[in-house]
Image (cartoon, rainbow, N blue to C red; front, side, top):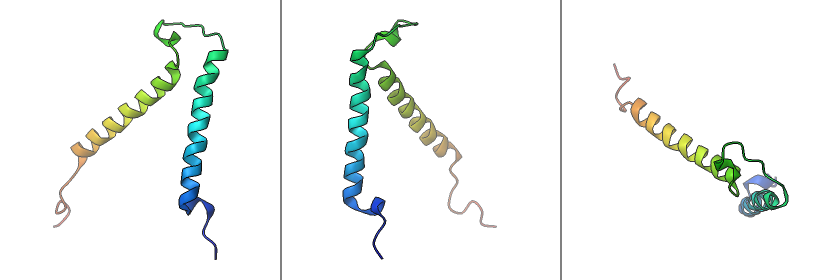
Length: 79
């Protein structure tokens, strides 16, 4: 039986390339539209991309800190 196409190593590289191209296209498309800044900072180039990236970083750091606080020892549930 043939492997599913997503488990092949080449498929991962292709998907990363496609996702990077889509991200670059959406950031470059911002050059073609007129932005209307409501708060000042949202008028800078690629603000939405940076805001989303920063939000992901905050979520990762928060989840790592929460995991460290909630972590139990290996023998915690031993009676």
